[in-house]
Length: 220
Length: 345
Image (cartoon, rainbow over all chains, first blue to last red):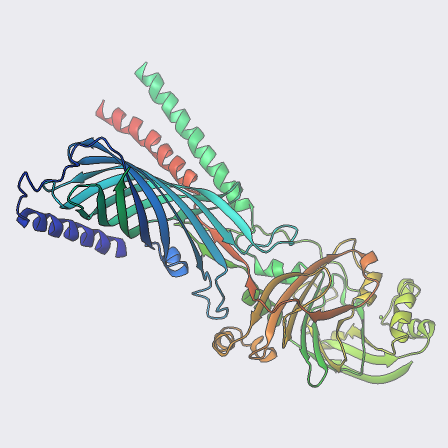
């Protein structure tokens, strides 16, 4: 139900942005930024918030703040290939629905999403751009959970694993006149599933999320 | 050729499904993800609930006897440091303790859980001269005595039917331990006239009532020493405590520790009506477990404040394993595709 509403919202947002882009006056050649088609790679530093959609993840952790870096190359005119990595850590209270044990932040989630994807600028190259993109994503995930070990000597156990999925991105970007620096805002929808743990001690991990990210990019 | 490929794909489908089922069965066989509360309550060889009030130095000790034999065989001696008030409690108290303190099982997927029931044999608890009190408490006939002579005490309890002759010698060392400390002994037998259905073999687990002892004590004590007489090679001891701080004892694993807030007490009162009156807002409810051999039961257990008052509760996540789901989908495709092709042909 929630996911359906969210997908509709994302679709509406895309259509709204495309409409906005179509009414932005096309820039003149003189206004066009010099970086179009440049082979020089670009490094972006990102700060993002991933709001989890799965009920238990949302109620336990809410979301996760991540910091990352993204390396981009021009793949063709108006399209970029990129590799990205982020890292985040969040504590959560798994007892949120247990009224007889109000609990504490007993679990901790660490995530290292690695991304590989494309972005397209959907309007004319200018200082204001609007990008659409998608990425394949692999997330190394570690979760510390209060589980008694067989010896009972430690009360926290660490479960690790990989999540795999795809991410859809869109958002505006403002680029300096000479094209060497850029500031952007990106919103995305991520579908990501996997497992943590080994053998019989394993469980599913759903990192589906909506995410927002700001970044600052510089030419290398 | 085409027919052969279809057959192969069908066999492959069977294999994938078998693999899926095996993987799932392995996950189910773990049995640790959803506790079977009957097992939690009846598996430990010794189980107790202890509430201690520091201001009045009073201890409330509730013992859940486990005993496998005919009712006339039942004899039980519990040493206590001062003259106790004796009453019976409800078995449900221990079920509610188990429910309240159980690991929190949470589903992280569209999944299911399972439990594997593995009931272990329950070993009989050991049974124990001035007579201080004699009464009928629930199904028990109790006799509270004290003595300065362990031999006389064992002889008397044997003569009164609280001890078997073959145990008479073995209990004397334990009696001596408590006599040196000027403790009292509560000897108990089943009064078969109090049983609703007095059949010779009615005493199976589930039939015994917990016994509650209220007494004054300078220390929070669990009378373990006397258990060494009849303990199996490995005794599992499970103690719930309620006191104004988190408690522990040497070698104990803390499975649950919670400082009870007013909100939690409200939830507990509505959900655990038998347990709630034994709890106290602002106090700590703790669940402690330890495996012991008879050689380790040379002293009574003294419960002491834990190093920290941090709360703790176990969390266990479950889900349908992702890879199993993929295999199931693959198996489904391998089954369906040949059939669709067959229909088209």
